[in-house]
Picture 1 (tube, rainbow, N blue to C red):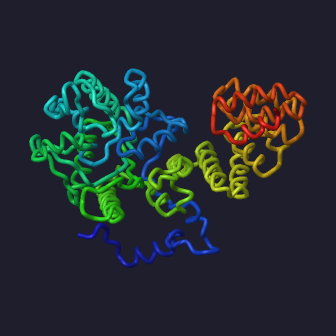
Picture 2 (tube, one colour; picture 1 turned 45 degrees about the vertical axis):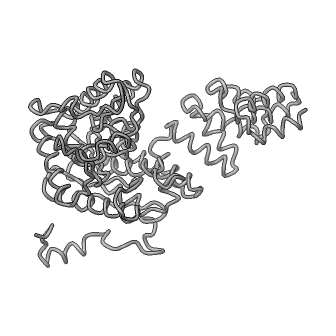
Picture 3 (cartoon, rainbow, N blue to C red; picture 1 turned 90 degrees about the vertical axis):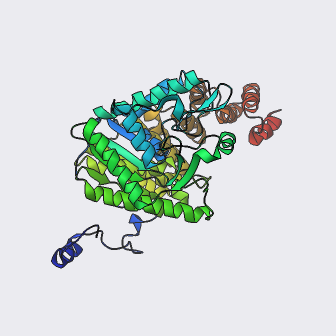
Length: 470
């Protein structure tokens, strides 16, 4: 049946009232699409500043939680960092869940006493005392069974905190899912290839289709209804991070398009099924933005700045009339424009943010760096001076600004303070040497350059400058 049925008179009325019903046009509303696409969302609930927000799903969930944390929300999944102090082999993607069935499994095992984790049977011994948990992430190293079990307990301990979170953010990642025929259960990651080859009859690769994904999403909703927060809300999106490789015979570009398309379609039906589920269009924003604005050099990972724009936009949408969320929205858009080298637009957004909170050290740092790049060294020095005790790299940039202003003695002092903060930053010694040379301190310049080359042996500018000093 249709996803939605709209009477003709209602459709015509919506056509008149929806100001975002047309595709962006050149010279009219192109800024909605380029360089960063900014689709709008219509929230059915509100966020409470500083409240607990649970993030679960693909690696994009880790991107989201970092920015929510920076906005002042309480993020339980950040607790994995504490665990990493005990187990340094655990990577940042420790909690990633790539397929909907894995999300459902983890919630069920963590919340339902009647459905515990299957135990050692669900783990695989790859070689003598080298075990792997296929319900974790593929990059977690093999380890003795005791450590594997400790990691699993930690994952479930962190996941169980979802009951204290009114808002759950879910990011959907993949549809190529590995299946354990012996236990009748979906995995989060395939076992190591050597083990998989020896036990090929036990496992299958399933390319999930729309109804399977939608059913899995409904199962997730059922678990949260039964065991979660009594007033839980779900904010769902699709991860834009593409498939690394496909196990089908398709071109990976085609396989990835199917994966994201079917996830997006299922997410829309999921939203239409439950009143407490919203969709947030970060997938559309990143997918439709200019590649240089959206992606890192590896063509896979999303740039932090554009994630910041989307999370600030989410906060701005779900925290209505909240000046602080609007401040972060403007700040993050300014940072994204600065990253693209579009300095005039960046300055415009920074100045708008400044009207809300002129004392914010991050804003003052970003404005200082921007004005330095624009050649206004007086303004750069002024802004960086306001942030230097909070933002670590502000003193470095301020030292550069003072050098350009001919205030060499102050530049040396500022760069010395920067070095005390980060003694392994080779450019700080290099620029300190340039200021020392202007002051006639060639011996000091030589020492600074030798230190910079000791840190970074291929630092060509420092090597050339040292030759000149000698």
